[in-house]
Amino acid sequence: MDKNTSAARAETLRALHHGQDVLLLPNAWDVLTARVFEQQGFPAVATTSGGIAWALGYGDGEQTPLAEVLAAVGRITRVVKVPVTVDFEGGYGASAQAVGESVRAIIQAGAAGINLEDSLPGHGPLRPVDEAAARIRAARQAADQAGVPIVINARVDAWMHAKDNPQAPLEDAIARGRAYLAAGADCLYPIGLLDVPVISAFTTALNAPVNVMAVAATPPLAELKAAGVKRLSTATALTALALGSVRNAVRTIRDTGTFDALRSDFNYIDAQSLFTTTAG
Image 1 (cartoon, rainbow, N blue to C red):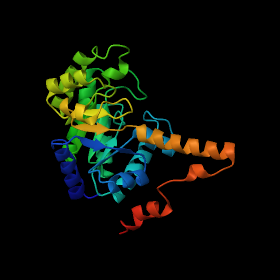
Image 2 (spheres, rainbow, N blue to C red):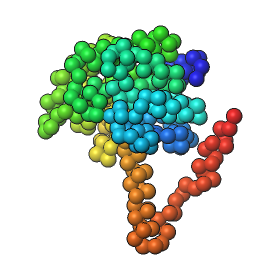
Image 3 (cartoon, rainbow, N blue to C red):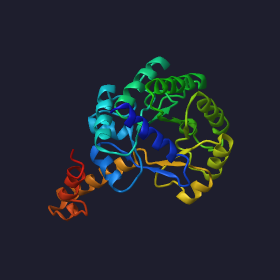
Image 4 (cartoon, rainbow, N blue to C red):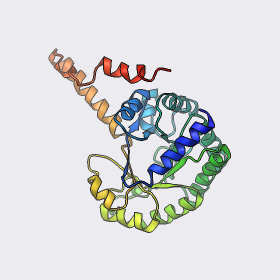
């Protein structure tokens, strides 16, 4: 993707974090799902690392080779016109310098934004805060050098490592959030945090856009907005929903020999139209 288009999409994505409404980001795992989301009027699309990994035949947790991730993202950004923010896991690099190199590559693939998590790959332990911040700083420097002001969504994994008390990680998460913002992050993602009073405390302390994960147990959007949330993404939830629907359908066919489970309000023509209308 050319630099001007990439930069324009990144600026659009950045502005969406500062509007009156919460930015709703469904997470796509291929071009087809990204086009469905775009067609439904979402102003930007996210990717899910888990969904992309599974679709390509790998486990989540940076097990997918970077070249395959870049190719998958490039296919999405080639087709959709809205900004695409990429779940880039830990940044695909053992060092901060290597993260910077990988970020340059994902920008070239058309990413308008990235997630960077502060756990080791595969939901490992939290990185030391200074190390995690250095990786964000390298990503920001890479974006600056590329001339594409991508939105860096820094994932704060404190709650993923908390067992029982949702209040316990708050102090550490706030300290991490401040360090990540100082390093060049634009948005913070306290994944696993669903307690509205704690969300409010987090957003108040950091005064920056905050991303919350949408799952069945996530509080209503109005409550999240009142708590200061500016962005909501679905992570792997839509991938799991789609796979669950397919699994239930094929089980029904196998067990009953009937095909009513194949009824859908989405058909071949609907899928074909997602691409014929964007031809050229």
